[in-house]
Amino acid sequence: MKFILGKKIEMTQVFDESGEVTPVTLIEAGPCKVLQKKNKEKDLYEAVQIGYVEITKKNQMKKPSTGKHFKYIKEFSGADYNPGDEINSSIFRVGDIVNVSGKSKGKGFQGGMKKWGFSGAGGSHGVKHTKRKIGSIGGAFPQRVLKGKKMPGRMGQERITVKGLKVIKVENNIITLKGAVPGRRGTLLEITGK
Image (tube, rainbow, N blue to C red):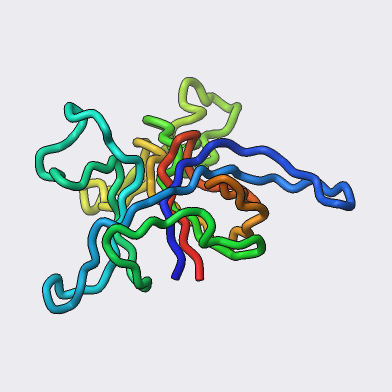
């Protein structure tokens, strides 16, 4: 199991030998430091805890994380590392297939048409001021709005995993992946592969 934390830099495009264009995403991956190794005897599960983006200023440190001065700390299972080991982008090779997880862009409060794809009301025959409304939200029974009803609300800012992305290039802790990954520039990403 391969894994690393990184930040999304940007999307761009590359050309192959035949001149075909491929959309790619650049990710600044690692270096990450192994902070702790969890085991079944003490922690009741097995995992490796890694830290990314070391904090150097004392006023930015949180009290509970004293001794682990990293902005991002995550756990992964299925790998054998020891505390103090460093994980960098060289663990991935060109042609590897990886999964990338991260938070999607936050879009704020949105209506039913944008959030759920509702069609809205017709454009004629007395329709006035209600073209983008969601319409009826329930019947006469049970005299309340049922749980799970699709309604306007906050959109985005959800954890999304994109599977099956191909590694195009690995150079100077920058991984180039074919296709798009979740989030805006600077989003924290988890990259995992076999």
